[in-house]
Image (tube, rainbow, N blue to C red; front, side, top):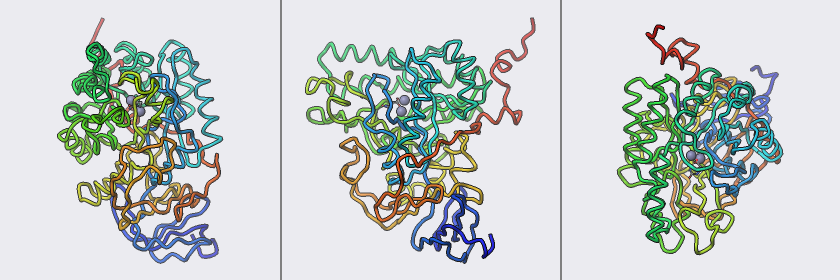
Length: 490
Ligand code: URP
Ligand code: ZN
Ligand code: ZN
C-alpha cells in the first residue's frame, strides 16, 4: 500500500492477537479487507485509535439457532436481525445458524426459506449448516450434494428428539455421504431411549419441575451416545464434531478417541462453564431459564470442560444460542402447569459468549489470549471452511475486528443485551473486558454502544471444505468404505 492509495480505515496503536501471536501494530483496511499490518501507518480516511485496546479477530459463532423451529416444534425468539445485532454487540462478526429440515420438508426449499430470512435482516456475515432429519435417497444423492456444492459444508444430525432422531444405520449413511462430498457431520449426542425412559418414570411420580430435566438427561445418556458416535466415525474413518459437550466423562471419551487417532472434534459452550444443575433447581418454574440439552452438570464437569478447552480436546467454543422467552411461546407452553418435558430446550448466549470467556478465561489467566482467539474465532473458520478469509488478522483477510477494552467492568443485566429473549442466565455477573468497537468487513458496526448497520447488510458466505475433510485430499484418510473393507477379498 503506497501513500497515494489511502486506506479507507486504519486501526492504530492497538495490541493485536491472533491464535498464535501477540504484537503491536497498526492495521490498514481497504474495500473491507486488511491490506497492511505494520507499525507507524499513516491514518486512513477514517482512523480509530486503539491505544489500550486489544485488537482481535471478530468472533465466529458456529452454533446458533435463529428464526428456527426447534426439535420440539417451538419457534425461536430471535430473528436474523435481533440475533445478528446481539452477536455483534458481543464481538461476534460471523454466525453459522441452521437451516433446519423437519420430516416432510424438501431440503432445497428449507435452504431457500432461511436464505431469504437472513438476506433481508442480517447485519453481519453468515453461513448455514443444514439440520438433516430425513436422510432419504433424494437427500443423499441429490439435495445434499447440491447444498454442499453451494457452500453448506456441514450437517447437524440428532441422536435424540422424536422429530429429528436418526438411528445408527442412518448415521452411517450420512457419514458416508459426508466423506464422499466433503462435508463435516455435527452430532447432537444423547441416548434417546435413556432420556425417554427416565422422563417417563419421573413424570409418573409427579416429578416435573425444571430440575428433573437434568435428572432425565443423565450424564450417561451423553457419554453413551458420544461413545457410539465416535465408534461410527471410527468404523468408517470419517471425521465428526460432537456439539455442546457438557459432562466430564464425555470429555474423557473424546480425549481418549483423539489419542487413538480418531477424527473426532468437539465443541463446548458457556452454559457448561458457568452454569450447573443447581441453577435448574429454583422456586416455581424459574429453573426453566437454565434448561438446555445436554443440561449443565456440576463443578467437576465445569473443570473438565475448562481442561478440554485448554488441551485442545474441545476445539470450538460456541454459544448454542437457543432463544426462548419465559412465556407461552417458549419455556412455558402450559403456563404454571408446564413440566420439564413440555418446555423448549435451550439457553441464550450469542452476545455474552465472548465476554464471559474473555473475563473468566483470559482475565483470570486460565487461558491465553491466543487460546481465546482460537476457541472463539480461528478454529471455527478452519473447522467450517471459512479460513483464511475469516477468523484471523492477516493481509487478505476480511476486516472483521473487535477492539476489546480489558479495563472495562460490566455487570450483566438482560436490559443491556440486544436479543429478544427477556432474560439472561448470566444476570448479575460482573465481567472484566468488553468489545467496545466492532468492525464487519471494514464497516464500523458497533461504536459508542451504538449500532451502525442496515438490516440486510450482512452477506451470505459460501463455505469451503472444512479442514477435517481436507485430510482426504492430503491422503491421510482411508475414506469411508475403504476403511471398512480394508484387507477384504471376495
Ligand atoms: O438445548 C438445546 N441445546 N437446544 C438447542 C437445540 C440443540 O440441540 O442444539
Ligand atoms: Zn443439539
Ligand atoms: Zn443447538
